[in-house]
Image 1 (cartoon, helix red, strand yellow):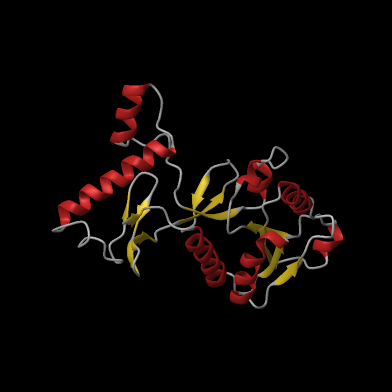
Image 2 (cartoon, rainbow, N blue to C red):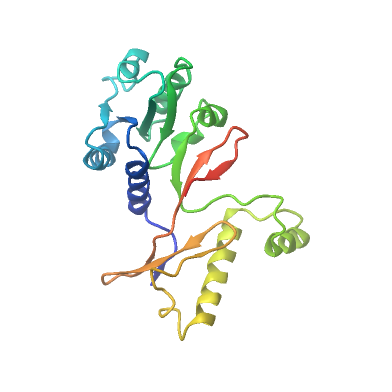
Length: 231
């Protein structure tokens, strides 16, 4: 059995590893509610110098609750927000966007969940905070002259959505792997990574559970509201 989508746990671990690798000298702050206590524990275990902030009893924070943990001037503040609650998320993003200009801020999460689709959370505010998160896929450039995109639009009159693109990427990957080895299992070495329009694949053998795709992206919002591939 092949698991073509990286697991949530893999995305979490990949994001934490990237922050650990690149976060030396940064003032790292974790804001997490009780429903994300497992993720908070993983972060603090990997980043023992990180500061932790817990929402007040009614599930919100005041400016002072965050401000007292911030560094000013040339120091970078990396804030990791872990919540499924859109109200708390909106509260935190609003506070961070209102911080003085001499606060160098960047916001992260291990899971860009449905809370980020809440009306009060604008992508422009997230972009101002250099919002960075793990993802199973990236977004393709609409100006790309990729044959699949062109033929799909010519046939259906619109560009393909992410589900159609993923279907193409998965199928194309399997065909190329079959063409390069005796069977698909021989072509699943963890050193063999492929990348197509929006997805990439690097399979590893799981104990008693087939193969798992461990390839992932880390994306960042840009000022023009596009996604920049960080990794």
